[in-house]
Image (cartoon, rainbow, N blue to C red):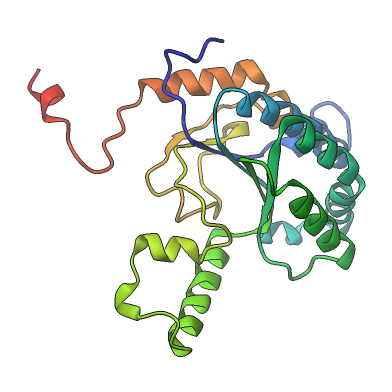
Length: 242
């Protein structure tokens, strides 16, 4: 699809949802669904970045996901580590910088090492793929607040200088606000995803499970986004009076 006459968001965020249900409906294991979802995120992200979108955040594993079965959690952890080489090749091929957002607690040394390797070897690129793994929006805001308190205590920050732009710098990464937030599978909630960054995002909730959320489905999201009138709390009086 030609994006030249469409509104193109700077930052797209996706809640990757429906992998397990997609697999279950096909008589497959949930783990097989997660594998299909992983393959799709690589293909879809390459397409998204090709459309002059600079930032993509994907919610792959939340802090709450540790409540799932040990088998499923273990599979997701091993999937990340096992695909390290493919992730690196993908990032280099598409000139994408990969970063990880989330807490390090409960992650194995092997997972942390894989994350560090990916970040270090792709940091020279300009397009940013923010992988939210062991992530929670509440946790991010709390962790940022703790950093700020420590900075104030040590005299490195004047509390009177704290504003929204400064606060943003203490989050896991200093990213621009989300413009378009997509959650696949038909669920209509944020589920603790990038609460600070999504404050003025446009939301789009397709019923499609993530493994089937392909390029054409993403095009539909952009077409819908183009129709939206983003006012950020203000009013376009010229439109109102016409």
